Image (tube, rainbow, N blue to C red; front, side, top):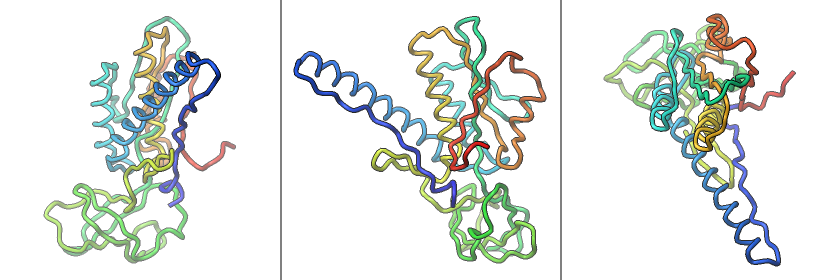
Length: 258
């Protein structure tokens, strides 16, 4: 898949060498700290990316976001639409808003067609060429194996066929791709878009809190971005962000800005 196979480079600090042993030792210590930061970021990303999600089915990711916030004593709240707003305010400064989204393109189950067959609607922007019969998917909850079947009409609706009947009816489905891996300094996974963005927000807030920085940073971790920025639009409509905020969207995607 175009975004599913996207990989994100986790840059590592290079150890500098010099004639003075003390300089080399300091550089080495700095590099070690940087590498530890990379390892911690990858741990955050892994925790998020191992949670399945599709538009309107982000509950597992959202729960993990809230657990991470609680562990690091970051103030957060869930709004009426289901977005998570995380805030670190240690100074009266212009607010910086970092935004990312929890969902990734996926299939929403419409109804059961037979004991081992479901009709599913695809939510998100993926070219038609990727919807080939036989493509493997996972049915959620539970992660049962299934395969893409026929497309009954022109709409992005498809039959999904499981190997055996399920005791728990599925609610959504995701592509059968690895959840998370780090290889050669790159993060690989089905949902780098945009869970790497979510991990970046949390990592930034955690680092700022640890450093004692004087800041006002708000993380907007939204749902249902893939079908029209619905979560972000709900935040905007509620007018709860300060009017003078500087908003930066963290989008881990191959798409280039227009």
